[in-house]
Length: 268
Length: 247
Ligand SMILES: Nc1ncnc2c1ncn2[C@@H]1O[C@H](COP(=O)(O)OP(=O)(O)OP(=O)(O)O)[C@@H](O)[C@H]1O
Ligand SMILES: [Mg+2]
Image (cartoon, rainbow over all chains, first blue to last red; front, side, top):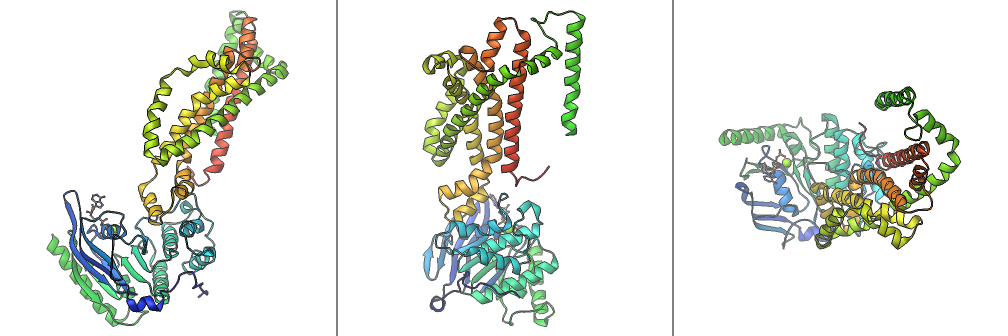
């Protein structure tokens, strides 16, 4: 594995970690005209925890992230970070949306450098860090390609790099690996895990892939179809990196799948 | 390329009918010269035509430059603040209701027979399409991209430089292409009203002397200038919009 410039993604400093910047969502509600997407939702994610969110398509996961980020206004509820109530996580979290949202006139590298160009206090030597992340994510040699010249999977990876170059303690990922083939996906899963372990970031990741959730997450949250509720929260203690062939993973997979199935039959 | 050469077929047919018609019916050249004669005069009188063409081309280019210098800041300031847009857009729309060509005689009185009145004439009629196309381009920007920039707390100017300006370029170029064509008309009308040089001036002079062949030759040169400018804008567009998907 290539050496990685760690200074770029500042590890959460130990003092902060002791305080424990817990993300706490209390009684959060959101509805669109006539459609209640979620009501009185509660979620707590401790510092440094990798939390995967799984739920049926259209249940409101992306909307949940949008509300957390302040992209959409909440109807009611409270979001707090490190014990302090905040309006949204705009200045706390890096957010990778479901769409890649790469600027078509910039190369992949320039796209990944966008946060460095805009954010004040962002480290100046962003280019090297981006190159390193590109190497880790299998994008070396494609730095100067335009988004429309590469595959959807590559665009998604470039968008992931862009998100990771945000200097933030909390990372929200909306199906970050959905457009990837199985092999690239498993490589990227490993890289995501390494990054999270190295820098101790708190990660919330939406995924449709049960195995992915079980391999990466400390906590797997199963969500119901709309209105979205927390059905189950599974804490997985087995050490990382995990393998799909681990018997424990297999066991959890059974549980999660049967839970999801039950939810679907109840919904129908 | 194939499509373009297809356009040559009706054009050639038209020219042949014109040529044959003139000869067959013995049309007086001061009424309607055959295309062969127009072509010949265009070359034989090239030095004269060229010096007039340079004046007209300069007027068009300066008119474009002036229009851009007004339209771009105007579009940006209207985009910057809704209040500015609300204050200015009715005026802009109203300004389009004025038959600007009717102002040509006044412009000549105010600015003289020289180049200035034609430059202003051209600029006045084209700054509006340029400003509108740019503003529409800014405003058409995808909301999701704007959110991405807002999440990073990008300033207005950062967003303008990195997002809205490139986003608006295709629309801006559409406006600019239209402007180039219209600017030619503006400059020529300016010259008709009163000038000392230029292809429009030459047309009026030659018309009075019953030199229809020279009038047509002037039109031919104007067409070439117009197409040349159009082509230049097209080249620039391809260069600037390198990121547009092919096809
Ligand atoms: N702007 C909007 N206005 C009205 N309804 C919306 C809006 N955005 C989303 N919805 C609705 O809210 C529900 C939740 O959508 P959301 O995109 O959050 O689902 P999701 O869980 O992310 O789905 P997927 O897994 O397919 O990405 C859907 O029924 C959708 O139709
Ligand atoms: Mg979604």
